[in-house]
Length: 418
Ligand SMILES: NC(=O)c1ccc[n+]([C@@H]2O[C@H](COP(=O)([O-])OP(=O)(O)OC[C@H]3O[C@@H](n4cnc5c(N)ncnc54)[C@H](O)[C@@H]3O)[C@@H](O)[C@H]2O)c1
Image (cartoon, rainbow, N blue to C red; front, side, top):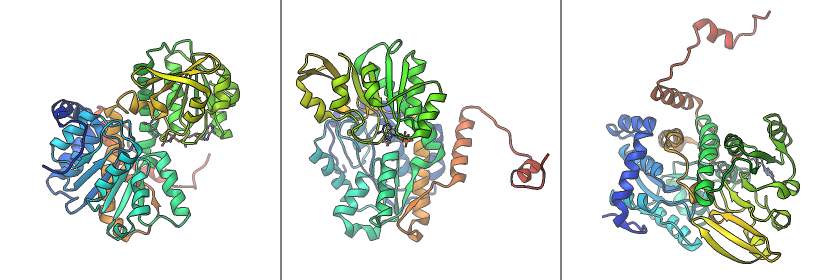
């Protein structure tokens, strides 16, 4: 039995049923698994991963292993691990260090355990593994071919490291693959965050004023789903172009100071800290619900919320009622962490099929090219994006047009006009 630490290994059987179910909804990744199981192109690669332990992640990890890699895993959020899935992974001889409800110390202990595995590839969601490696294990860096980063916030972090000259090995920005952020961030976050809101609060969305902060990829998905459920949608933004886009998409746009007075439900998706602070909370309606879909738990200032309150109680799973000193109550979803992962199951498998096909392709690409690359952040190859999209369309039974030879020539020509 490999080294692992999970909540309860006896949950493995239930976890395996979840993983099997996810596999059936991830045809592109499963096709790639079949394709790479024979030649095992990742043989000799030791991958340490730090990404939410969900049923879809188990499908990715088992695919990496089928392709020849040795893999060790931790979760990338203290509250997002599915304990059943973690047990199923451990029972399948994967060194996994993850359980739901980690303290901060335990969270970093789990990352350290995956580093004992001495990776030559890393796979991150939020860059905590990359950052830990740089800060505490510089001696491991010469062995690294490269790493990949799954989310917007993580890509921003590694780009900042690169600009600062602090990045010491090449990272592929998987988030920036078209087949990742145009689908995962939009449809995945949009649907699964409302899944989380509904499981935790059981409120009716129709007729409510729902405030979405950030009109990026995630915010766009959230606003679309909120409107679909019958909400009056308000968007807050700091970027004038995105604010204009939100308005022209038909939403009301205003500063948070004003939105705070109107909202029944708030969901932040900015990747920025202090989107909702005590100043805003003071203006909110009694009973307003606050949640976050951005990567870190910094968007709703929970210290401010605690300071305004004289007590709190957990009224439902993933829903805390804060009793404010002035008599109002505010509700916080999932302790201000990713509501779709804490209060629900994360993105549906169908969309993670695309994101994790990109992750597998990133690992394959880095295992071949990584040694010759300088420490920098690399774009996902466009041809891989096209291949993945075509493969997904095929699994959906959808055919598309192909450019004729004349059209292909026209696409890059300049001589023909009116
Ligand atoms: N919940 C999930 O499963 C999930 C999935 C993907 C991404 N994410 C995370 O969600 C966050 C957003 O990702 P994205 O891809 O939509 O990023 P994005 O860059 O496309 O959008 C973020 C938007 O927030 C806006 N913003 C920044 N500061 C603001 C402020 N003070 N007030 C209002 N708006 C502000 C920006 O102008 C931008 O338009 C990131 O933290 C990302 O890592 C979460």
